[in-house]
Structures are given as structure tokens and as C-alpha cells.
Image (cartoon, rainbow, N blue to C red; front, side, top):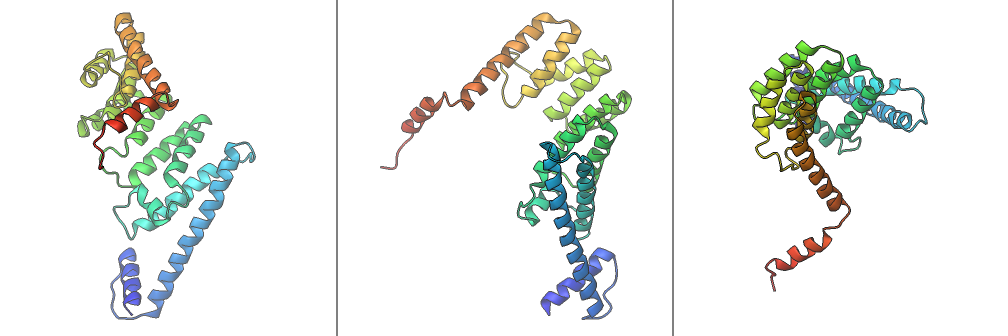
Length: 269
């Protein structure tokens, strides 16, 4: 009975209706039907995403599967929001036990749409994701950055500028927002404004790290456009040093150092 009451309550909550009597078989049946429909949507999504990856490797020439799967994912998410108004994107992976790697698929999806040159569709995708899901601090940065880039590609410069300014006002310490601002202001030839953002996030032009490498890349392009050779040379030198560090790290050339660090630790015996 407790399970039945819960189902009835969840159905009423989702549909904004009043519970006037308990139990009611119609509530149970309709709620079960909705659950079954959601399961069918997930099955269809699984088939569509398989087609997507076949398309990615050239085994399937129908690229429409990407937008079809995205629209279906929107439908699934909106249905889930009836029970969870503060739905986060990662929640979809949680409730499906990561069976579909939704976050990974979305990134691949937007990359494919971007490479196909469908900027309007990509912009709609960014807006849909930002509207449907709730995003904890900074977790929507990649999507917002992509939106700025798409607006620039569509030559909607003023709109991109407004979006960047509002983003920076809300998240003044977000380096991704600042980097998007550099590209946007640079595109509008507002070089001084772009350089102010670079200076705000790069205190030492000789030290490029994992935390600021995106800003260093943007700064290199900005100084090239501005004709500031000295500054660009300094930034590029730091970028090359960081790239060499990454190459050494991923090639395993620092294994010996890691082993020495291990033996330097206090051992329990």
C-alpha cells in the first residue's frame, strides 16, 4: 500500500492534480503507463545513439540521428523534471547507472553538429541545455563558451557581447567566462577590453598551468592581432614550456620522479 500511495502522490505532483481519494486504480495505471513510456524512450535513445556513433565512423550516412537523439533526450529530461524540478544533467547518468554516458554523448553530438556547419542548430542546443537543466557553479561553462563561439560564427557580435558581459557579471572569477570574453571583444576589435581580461587572469606571463592555459592561448592570439610581438613571444614561450611538460607527463618520463616521491613518504613500518 505504501508503494501504491507513493505512485499516486508522484502522479498527482507531476500533473498538478489533487488527491481526492485513496487508492484509485486509474492513478496507478496512468502512472505506470508514463513509467513504461519513459522506458521506451530510453530504449529508443539507446538505438539512436548507436546510429550516431556508426555515423561518426562512416558506417552510417544518415547524420539526422544526432538531432533526433538530442530532441528525444530533451523529451526524456522534461519528463524527469516533472518529478525533479531542479534536474541536473549528471542526474540522468545517475538514474540510468551511466548506461548511455549522456554527458559524453552530448559533447560528441555538439562537436558533430559544429563540424557539419549547422551553427543555428548548435545554438539552439546550447540554449535548450542551459534552459532545461539546473547547473551548479561553473558546470555550464563549456556550454556557455560554445554558445559565445557560435554567436561569433553567426556574426551576431552584439548578442555575443551582451551574453559575455552578463556572464562575467555573474561569475567574475570564472576564467572560462573571461576567455570567452577575450575572443568576443577581440572579434569586435575592442582590444583594450580584451587585454584587461588577460591581465586580470594572467599575473605571471612566464607561467602557464592547467588552470590558465586557455587564457594563455587566447592571449597569444590577442597579442598577435594587436601587433604586440614582445608580449606574444613571452606568452608563446610559456605555452611551449607547458606543452613540453604535458608531453613529458603523458609519455611517462617522470615515472622516476614519482617513484622517488613515493620512497620519501613516511612508511607505516
